[in-house]
Length: 241
Image (cartoon, rainbow, N blue to C red):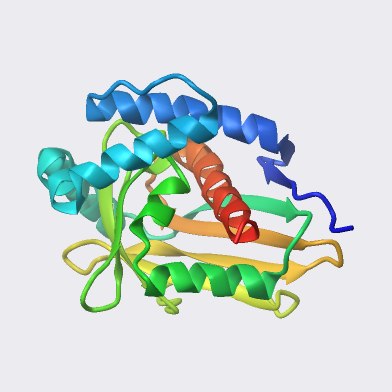
């Protein structure tokens, strides 16, 4: 008999069971719906998640960019200032213990979503995702509420690149998802190195994102939840296929 699928996260050194992670997601669904000016039907977090994804897909990428253009302009100026004025990195860290599956399968699944430009799968991972799409140059354009911020921000991920990352790859991890992040003007904003290894009863993920050192600490703390949630939801989606 196959083991039961479950995910435990570790955030700020504390074990966070799946139910608590989903409760955080449910609150962020409410916040995202409010930002979009829509009312969702009742239901459990899975139902509300799908309703929110449908709303964002209906608005579309260009609609999201138009609707939040002023917020994105303001946050972009702030990000350029923070990235240029302060050197060094602030780190978002989280861990996942997944009871079924493998590092290879999960990373292959994630790569396939990127190749297919599966925007619904990208949005579904976290309510604070508003737009994740593959550009003609292969980079992924991301619009999100980083760290549960009331203001949206935009950056571009170059997967496979660790340009500028301070966190090195560790040989004990067999697989990784790595990307450098740049602003619209090309300024380096940070990036991510997500590392995975099999455990014999599933796999373990060590998730680290890098932001400019000037990033407020409260945003870093909330972004830990964001990162743990999105990879938890992607792991669950991969397990279901």
